[in-house]
Image (cartoon, rainbow, N blue to C red; front, side, top):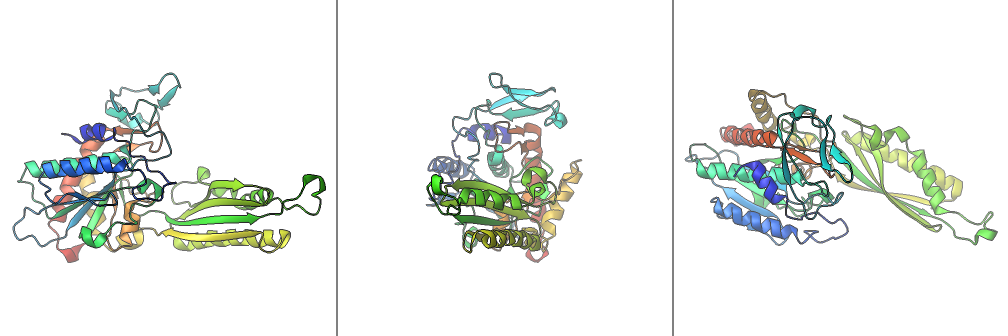
Length: 409
């Protein structure tokens, strides 16, 4: 079975993660997909495939090189899909694309723009029917890893070292590495097969901080509120307006960081705001935190001490701090992509991946693009030819990693 065929089957599993549920997995239906993958892995000779109590799937493809003592390579993808768009009853469809806007749902005039598809004229495009997301993030990566497993199972002439496979739950809500047992996984290095289009080889992510802003007000009868009421909603609005407007994510790109308000709940007596703070250099994260502290200090001076409180939660660091110490991990896929006739995309990830967390747990883990785009939306799509190229690339990378000694990583 080819990678794109697997994606079209895997997409039908409803595995949208649920942020409000603190359990792991957050969506019990993730177990259905995880168990199906473990059974498929066993059919491909991965005899130790298992699903643990938290829905992590792991298994081993043994080396077929006699006396192999090189690096153990991990391949990782996540099984959950984004909760940001409808994600149940996914109906994948395949379209041979010849140009123009690709209509997904005529009733709602929902389409993928010709501009988004301009590089894929003559290609085969997988989408949903327009009522849900597709789930190529990250089931395209899952499909490519499983297809690699099938190819290696059927063709013993492809030399490879020991390969560890892992499929993780709840990446889309930032929890996928929380219970990932790096020691049990036993890999020396790994790749996440995640992200966007084929040709991506990414060794950097944002560094990330979370912030909770709590505003305490004073409620008073509005008829007698003068000099008595302190409306927490208005103070919270002032705080948000004190942050640089042009440093919101809708105005940023490339290596530019941002402040992003993600939630607001308020009454006269109390208002809370959730923020994420992103940049590629940790010192800039700290500078952004200081801007927020200064805003709180000013408002406390105006409205009274303790009116505004800001609490910060460190989330993850730029994985480049770790991956740069293992240059072969990026040099090899970059060379393969070029040899295939493509120009690699090494732009840093404007987000986080399993690899960002795992790198700091001792598992250096760059990211390789599986061949999809427009993630977290009903306009999500995957390109069949990109998925086939990604699978070929990963197979070649596996062979080249097997030629290294552990100290050459």
